Image (cartoon, rainbow, N blue to C red; front, side):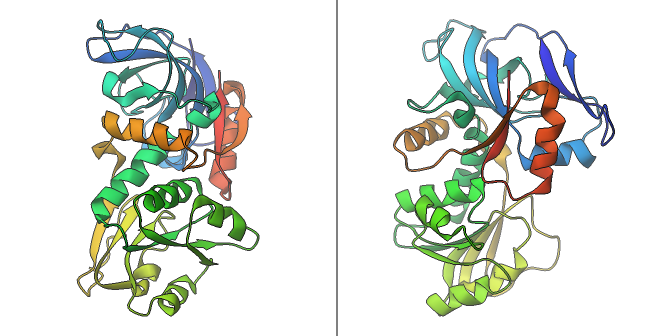
Length: 308
């Protein structure tokens, strides 16, 4: 069984393909035959500095059920599915031909969606839902979203609009129509002036910000009303509290990885066209390092996907 393997942070053999065995699933687990696995920023972070090699990365998988650890009724062998996978487990992450996943982290693939497209949905979709849950916005609330053209932001925008939330997002030159197509009510220029532009639209400030860039959190604080909130990916910056009663919500995917109901919701929203699944390119595992460098360079409109 082939698996993408991170051996070191750089060099010709930094990321290779290795053969390994995979144990049988235990009760409450599924063994998946992976056809596609997305490359996300967390994979690049783990490659460069976060995890002791060798290890297999990947949190998003799509493929078929290869075997079940018990006689389950919800999933069947051969069924097309998508899953969110923990790369920190001994068995490794999603970028392998066979992976072990808790049954709760697996749902049927959305109809009308390709396998590579399905592989872009679980982790980022769950991150979007967890952030929206933490913000607790009611219908009619206002939300500013940074990094509007990015994959995570596109899911946040679409899911927020389905909840009746008014969304203001940023976009770089040429991306305005793209971001509006995700469902943003207003699209403003990306950059240092985004927070001021938000205040120009809503002088009292928005109810909340979802910073998908992990870089603009403090710069967006002036856009938030007193007593509002901000959701940030990859943690707060460790500095002082934002003041004015603004709550900070660091978003962790770990709180949502076994949320089957949310995975089903994501599948339904994708099938209905409320969120757009975007693939930036397909790569065999032998070219995984190319996919990683593409993600590291930034600016992708979708996800690079490794296919087996």
